[in-house]
Each structure stands twice: as C-alpha cells, then as structure tokens.
Image (cartoon, rainbow, N blue to C red):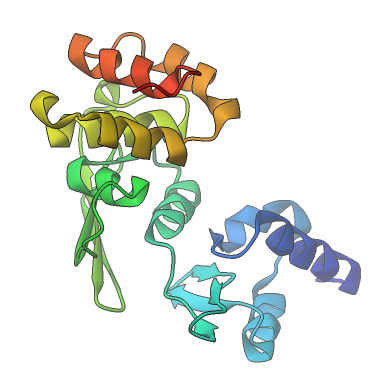
Length: 202
C-alpha cells in the first residue's frame, strides 16, 4: 500500500468519526491495507476489536480514557464484511436508542446470514438467522425504532418514550423513517407518527 493510499485510508477513518468500526473490506478500493492497519494500531490511532474488525476508539473527556467498542458499529462492520443484512432485535434496539440504560451483557441481531456469536470484552454479540423477507427497512434508524417499540409493547409507549426517541432521531431523518415504516403494524406506526411529527406537545 502506498503512502498516498494510507493517507486516504486514515482520512476515511477520521471522516467516519470516533466509534466507527471497520474491516479491510471497507478499504477494498485502496488495495491491501493490512500493514497500514498494523502501523495505525501500533501508533494507537485504531485498535483491533476482534479478528478482522477494528475501530477508531471513542474517548471520554470526563473519564480521560478510551471507551469500549460501539457494539452497533461492530455489528454493522461485520455485516458489511460478510454481506449480511442485519437489524437489532427487541431489547438490544431499545438499549441502542437509549430507552433503557442498563448495560446488557448480550446484543442480539437478526440476520440473513448464519447464526454466529462474537465475544467483545464482556459483551456477547449474537446474530440469529431469519428469513430474508422478514427484514428490509431502508434505514438503520427505522429498524431500531420499530424493534424497540415492539419490544416495549403498546401500553408502554408513553409521551416520555416518544420524546426520548424523537430526541435520539435526527430531525432530517424523520420524514424518511415515516415513509420507511408506513407498512408496519398499526399501533407501531401510530407511535412512529408521534415521534416524527414536528410539534412537541407529546
């Protein structure tokens, strides 16, 4: 790999921001980058999360230390690497959105790939195979919101929950999420309409 390509790879890493997880496949257009990644690991710029997956570590100014890997980013990096389609399921989705604050020991994803488990520090990342037709939202945010809402149940979708999800979901993505989820179960879509509308009266 040339110095020019190595700079391009580093630029791509910085461009995706701290917390981004990736594999060499994300740099396929730049040629082989194994040696370059090893140099960046030695410099402390990136770290190896699991075999074949790396990240650009998040850093806490409050704690003055690097934070653990972003599990959702790791899951997406694995999906890109193997060509899977994935969606976080139930409680995992709720946790990723921030509705639940308890740190889980296991994150579960539905996938059109094989059943697989990965151990990341003390956290288990699990992929469960389902039929391809059962997943297919166009945006990551849509899938997370739908699965989180379903896991909570209709009676638990309070104004506070609606407000929390609305705060998490960038305003520029709300119209797209609304369009992407219009065919989901009636009560779920009703909650999503409340989340995506512009007014804030609950």
